[in-house]
Amino acid sequence: MNRVDPAPRILFTANTAWCLYNFRAKPMQGLSEAGYAIAVLAPKDEYWPKLTDMGVSVHEIPIDSRGTNPLRDLATFFRFWRAFRRQKPALVFNYTIKSVIYGSLAARICGIPSIAVISGLGYTFINRDWRSAISKRLYRFALRFPDEVWFLNHDDHEVFQSENLIGNRPVHVLDGEGVDTVHFAPRETGGDGGGPVFLMISRLYWDKGVREFVEAAAEVHKTHPEARFHILGPLGDVAASAVPAETVKRWEDAGHIRHLGSTTDVRPHIAAADCVVLPSYREGLSRSLLEAASMGRPIITTDVVGCREVVDHGVNGLLCRRADSADLAARMREFLDLPESRRKEMGAAGRAKVLARFDVDLVVRMYLERVAALLDRRS
Image (cartoon, rainbow, N blue to C red):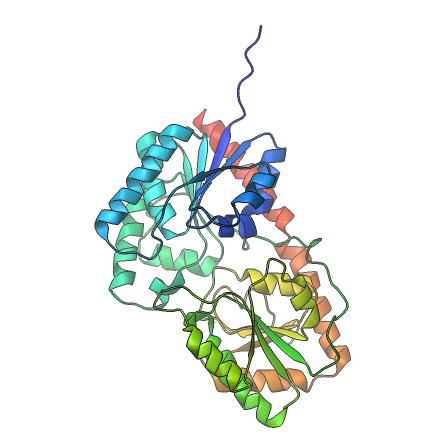
């Protein structure tokens, strides 16, 4: 009787199952359809059942994603090492900073090929403090170990290269992580007939530009009292960049914004919006903007890495200055002054751009090609 070799196991690691399900479900599905066995290593959360329903094998690893205690981080490394020895994957994808750092090191020690995906530089790179310095040292050490390093935009790659954080590792730059253009297809506006809606989709962190959005809303209300300003996304956690819940309530009580909370399906909210806004200080490549553009919504966002890649100023949206609520308010007023026909042209241009450059099928193809090449080279 001939022995049937098991399918090669591809393991995805990150600090939340939420981010793996929401941002990497399509690549995991594509690899599964190509004959690979897919597994996830992440802290347990409400997205575990969704991954299981996809046929993904899910395994728990506690990760203190924002902690700086070296003993806890050492324990995190050993958890990765034990998990890799137990799982024996053919290849590991590591996402988010602690998975990239400790997962890359553990994979090398276990003799397992790995790919580190830098999905964004985050708070520690925006704020150049001691946390940023430590993060860079850890990256410089750990990124000697993965077989490849992937970035979601060229600017982040250039930052890592200029600070000598990646050495001579092979690098690939993706145009973000793609968007499912079938799932996020254009819909007719599902608004309630009230005033125009500006929608911000984000966790409530200061560096996402929440303060600027609220200040701009208050300013625009002076000349356009009919305009409405909604924020869709969960409150931040205990991180230094999280907006306190009492601050959000104060903004709502003042009538500046409406906080919609979180949702498992952003599409009805995007469809009900006239314009999607993200005044972020920096992104890897904004998923919420890609989804909005895919659904044919005009965009206002900051002229920064990870946002400007989605918007051609004056074509499918408008760009404003970073951390400048007055400039954001000016762009909002500019949008409100546009005729409806021009807004529809912007939405159509955004959809066309996503189809040409950011469709998730292009990203899945990249995963399939690189995984096959890396495993062939190893074998």
